[in-house]
Length: 211
Figure 1 (spheres, rainbow, N blue to C red):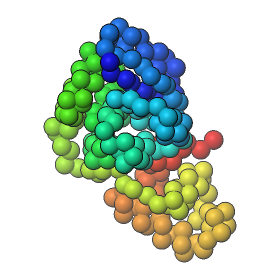
Figure 2 (figure 1 turned 180 degrees about the vertical axis):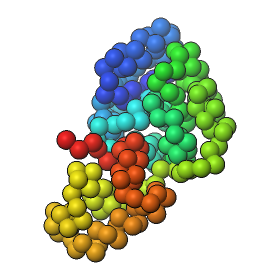
Figure 3 (figure 1 turned 90 degrees about the vertical axis):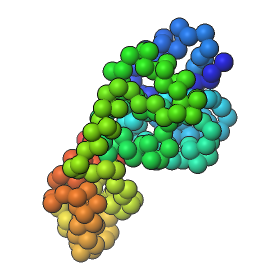
């Protein structure tokens, strides 16, 4: 019997996956979680062979979750469920140790094949993801940049529309420090303005949409 854990905060997708697995005699869904933190806590008491992990978690960036799980439970196979088809996102997930990457519109056959493939020690990519990786985009980022906690705080405030001076007041740092972080962020994302940095950070799930 292959034990599976699913982490996804979309009820319809969750039920769809459970139905796919229920039709297979050798698969059992052992637990379901709705965010990254509950997954990390749950894994302290529950073991499984395969974790299906939603790429857009409501609390923790999924790249960080993959890195933590692989560090603590290196034998567990992780298959990413994603709506992202950007090379940088896929490449970052694979480099952090993800064993599979499946688009959310993939077929049930793809999902079942993915489980058996990763358990054999081979990385599984659905057809659409394979095509993206084979193109190996020559332009744009090759990986999702890693940002510091302070950079994340500044980006989050900038996404709300605050100016450098306002951000400095909110975070109790100097405007010069804010400007330095802004420049570093533009260099990391290889763009010429912070607006594009914010757009990419939102797409990659590094910051949340401002309310």
